[in-house]
Length: 64
Image (cartoon, rainbow, N blue to C red; front, side, top):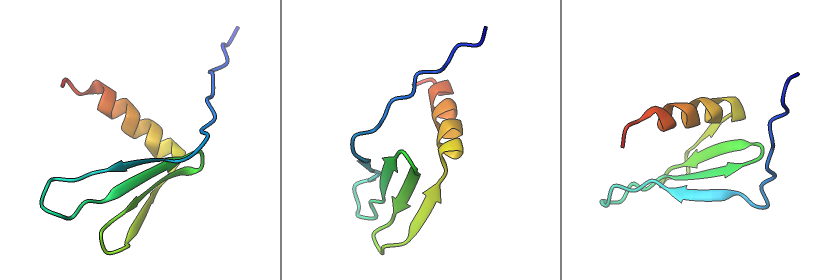
């Protein structure tokens, strides 16, 4: 019997600022639809939910 994976609903998008301290601080916004990275100049890169899953998996493999 296959277990159903519990899916959490996001009440609002999550924003994370990726900053190295000298300006140039892109912001990643994560929502149910996927993620978007916006740079200081307004340029955007979209990430699908599948790509977010891969990123999460790879980040969890890091030894920090």
